Image (cartoon, rainbow, N blue to C red; front, side, top):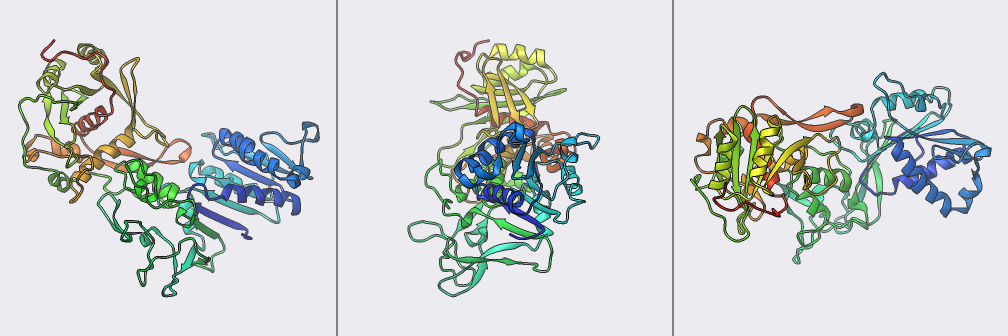
Length: 511
């Protein structure tokens, strides 16, 4: 990888950190270079210094001999390593609102490494480049798992010569870059795999684009540049090349690449595109449409009352404003995966909302904690263990939990990752509108749903967009162009199905 400027758009766990450690220490050792190694945060610096760099030194007698130890000799701290007579600086790339970043500006470097570009303040890249002004080497390395198209490492890679790993088909000799389209043959409206290449046993495989025979994805190959005359060198690393990657794993908890891409949760799909394929994620259907909602309609109507049977759940979601917008749904059908909407509409008071819970025998309910917190608490007290007060959390990276909501039983609160939850809720409408989507959890609508006042308008008013969040990092959010109360009622209803079982419930007909 001998290039002045080099970018790596990568999947997770591809050995790139090991390359960067070798590149940095070799530059100090053999090229008499000073290296500035940047991370998104100071915490990342500490973790890398202790776990990755420390582990590499411990495993190599040669590195132990050239990395100078002891504070008296000027180095070997968390943020500064002395390699022979040169220094390797490990620094966080945080930039203050006024543009100051003393930890970066204090270093004059020959080489700057930007590790996890997509999690960095974009201003750090300009500051790092300026640290090279006096160096005859002036080398840069940009490395990251991507997030969204034309952002961070994806934008840098697209300016490069775009090298991709090409394999040769042993059947017909066709040379080709290995991509997800060699595995998946058809995608659904959520951009999830619908059909893929597989043998008679159901084992998936990557197929040659010319003859359709199975490719040896782990066989010999070569890097080929799409734009060989560009000075910036770029590599794309995907788990399709990895011997440790699994294409498909049977069972509901399967962790293969296809399993991850099939999730209805947009956050999980994004993780698959970013972490498994090393590709940016383009959300499909970031806005519900009337066409999609019409496809969710089924041959049933709202019911005046309902009684649960067995272990069935009935969930209520309520968005609180000048009036309360409500959605009531029952457990998913065992054969179709469809959650029917038992009722949806407006009520004026919490007393009327209480009547809705009793009328539909609800045993799960999530309501907006704001703006009527006192009244919401009084309502919660009337249904102990059943009602939860919802607070939205706008998280830049999203929760790492499987579920988009965390329930705090001590205070009866549901803490909801807003974007992830809306991703999931909208996803269940997209699934309902897809043909052949049986057995996946989906939200259906009654045949006359279009006649419900304001419902379609509220459900189609929010759009998923990318905005600049903290430190300029792009984050996904839903932005409303008009009232969206029914959308949030549906969102709270979807989250209610995650709620733990009541430890002390209310009796039917009580209160």
